[in-house]
Amino acid sequence: MKRAIVLSGGGSKGAYEAGFLLAAKELNQHFDIVTGTSIGALNGALVAMGDYEGLEYTWNILDMDHVFNNAPDLTDLRDDFMTTSLFNKEEGSNLSELKESIAQQTSLAQSFLKHYFKNKGADNTPFVEHCRGLMDEERLLSSPIDFGICTVQFPSMKACYKTKSEMEKGHMLDYLLASSACFPVFPMTEINGNKYIDGGFSDNLPIDLALDMGADEIVVVDMHLIPVHPQYINRPSILYSCPPVDLGGFMDFNKDALERNKRLGYLMAYKLFGNYEGNQYTFLPSNQTVFHDYYKQLLMMEKEMRGFFNSNSSELTSLLLEANHQIILNLKDYTYITLDFIGELMGFDDLKVYAFEEYKNMILNAFEKYMEKDYFPQELSLTKVNLSFLQNHLNRESIVGFFLHQMKYKETMDMKSYYTFCKKELMMASLIYILMGGGSNEHH
Image (cartoon, rainbow, N blue to C red; front, side):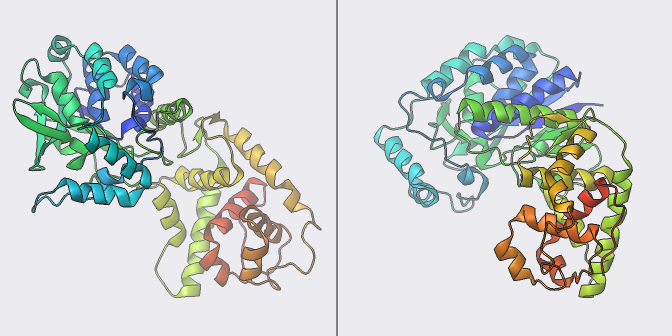
């Protein structure tokens, strides 16, 4: 049985990948095959060489000065031109279309393109030299871990997959740079007269390559909120992970952003391999009665919704699935993802590891004020206040608190319109009510 790890592209978001890989090593996760695109190829090469020290060092020192000489500030540049089809693969492509498309995205990209075309390419010498100092062809070739990358030939835009045994001796670094040549931010790479650009223009997550290389089990590290290859989600023998939050721009080398993303990747690995629990927020493993109680409450709420709307939908579960990248939910996920909604609403720190009771007490303390009998005036009740009043006069926290107050004091609740427009707020209130010891709450 061969086990593979597949690493996506994403520029500076590779810090997330590095955190994931360092955690995987701590957890003694072994891989026989590593494939990657763009920064995933560079991170993957270090893993295939067994050079975790080099991986950690890279993401500790990497900043804009280690990537470019005299580059403009690209902090806010997104990688939309990598993940959307700017190139018509059947009709070919041209630089004017690329320039126009990125210019529409942001004036920042337009400014960079002027710089690029004026100077015949960005000067990424510092990055190239850093990679050269880390790359050891003999160490990579002699490693028992097989390794492969994806790059793209230019101008044909044809995908080019290479395993380490297929890379010409003396050109391994060139292929890594070719895979990560995020044109037009990085210049094209030329190998034996052929020009190459970033593999992300074709396959930003080379799962197929891992299968071709003989993988039986695959761990996927996707760095995009919208999965690159959703067709591989919920497949036997494929453990697919995505970040729980947006990792930011792909040229954001701000130290705080890199450290945050590295920590998020580290925590994701611990959760994916079962050492921690949760989705966006991270918890020590535990078994709580609330997991079953809240799941049952959610089923009852969806049953009520189907009666209201004469449908067969499960809209509350759909919200949770969306937050979980459509990955099948287990019993605990219903609670954990709703706890994510609450944590985001209240601004809780998502880089910590929480004991369940600690997080629960934070929520109870935050919403305790809403449980006072006279917190809301008597005239403000669900039987007398319409939805527009709630939305115009209360913030989201107060709406959750308002629903919670009504549950506590058993106010009659005409739920139809609230199920339509306040689903998340009702889910949060229902979970908080259960955490407060209120049990399941029936609406009328």
